[in-house]
Amino acid sequence: MRITKIISSIALSATTVLAFSSAMAADMTGAGATFPYPIYAKWAESYKAATGNGLNYQSIGSGGGIKQIKAKTVDFGASDMPLSGDELNADGLLQFPAIMGGVVAVVNLDGVAPGQMKLTGQVISDIYLGKITKWNAPAIVALNPGVKLPATDITVVHRADGSGTSFLFTDFLSKSSPEFKTKVGSGTAVKWVVGVGGKGNEGVAANVQRIKGAIGYVEYAYAKKNKMAHTQLKNHDGAFVQPDDETFKAAAAHADWAKTPGFGVVLTDQAGKNSWPITGASFILIHKVQADPAKAKEVLKFFAWAYKHGAASATELEYVAMPASVSKLVEDSWKNIKDASGKAVW
Image 1 (cartoon, rainbow, N blue to C red):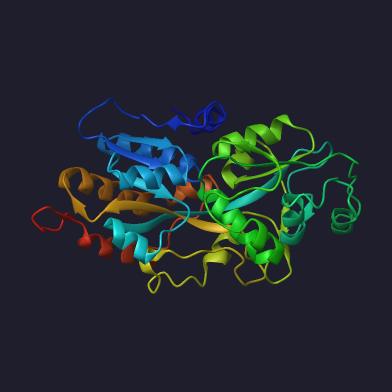
Image 2 (cartoon, rainbow, N blue to C red; image 1 turned 90 degrees about the horizontal axis):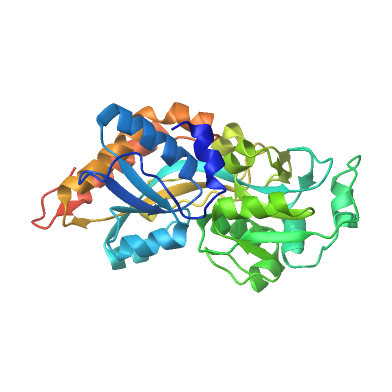
């Protein structure tokens, strides 16, 4: 399956299922975040070709992935919001980052090209609070001299499901606006003040593409592959930056993975003149005690393969592979995954 076809099919359903193999007993099952779906699709295709082993991944949102791994209905869960050390311990879970990328604001305005418009966290917060309702509002015009902005109503689009993409977006807005932090806050599921919902990154993207004057937020690969008009954003150091693998890497440059429980580093609003302000890692959740150690080992083999061989595909799709120093720490942590007798799986 070609990756271009994979991406185009994303818009068809918010519950996209990867099935790169027949229903063999050896196939791995995972569910959760839509943010990393394009790269997991590509990795699964390549891993199947290299090893013969398949991955069936349900792109249902981080909230769904957390629920399914806690219920033990999948071999691993995926979430863009890291769970705390206490949460991990309470459910007997181990967490590790698989990939990094960026969330972007996207707009549907005639004559506005991808990367042309500039926005700040404060302005986006006011839009999502319903305080700025027209595209020619003074606060937007002031940021965009020379850009023709219509007197069009702004239609706010947000996620309707539990979402790690929403966590990253609302975490950034909460750091940008005390009012947004108080009235909406950050999380995978929040009580939005205005707007219409879409399920998954694909649902938000579809709504923004359908509605003139819309604004939404999606993972960058969705915006790029669907030729959506993303915006520049003002970062922590006051610079307007474009999203790409270099600005994502800049945001992650000073992350202290080793000292954070479950490697749960949040990369929004990082310092650095080149840092993209809505950068984040996507995390894998797996039980520490395994009833099926052979299946758990296959999951770990898949992600070890992805760390070693998946960087080129990640770059192609505008993600950032985990640095070798981090993947080494992660693989060392896998010794804590054991079978029912206490024997290490990895």
